[in-house]
Length: 194
Image (tube, rainbow, N blue to C red; front, top):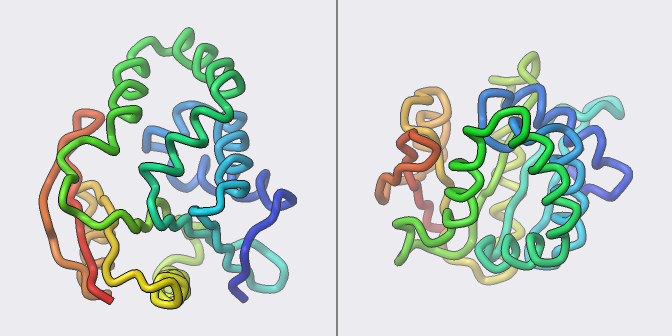
């Protein structure tokens, strides 16, 4: 079953993001940061989170946005103090995170001009449930939402060395638009027409 998440789901979603996407930047800021981020995302009107459950157990989720650049700015502005406390804790433990934090704040301006504002921001499926069509189900639900709101195309950014993820999006009809560098890695900006 796919449904919209509520504030009651924040701990589960944050835990899944933290454990399944551990090598990525956002989990490096800690579980408390992720919880605060998802609380902010749930409240943001232009952004939505879909949960995929089986037998009342969370198997995956997806974050989509009609304009993540604007939503991200608003979430940061509205939660600046709460985010700052968590970020300072993590930077104190690992000062190299500061560079990534600055890049994240500049991400929405980094070489993505001309691409659509609608975006698949994050998708996460628990590892034992991957390759069972759950990611595909979440993306199809996202596309229904986008189509109902008149969105004609949307983007997703994917680490260029993550072959399974790039192949997943290619199979769904995404086309590579450009490549950017962030966090010392290359990311493909993929676009799909609806």
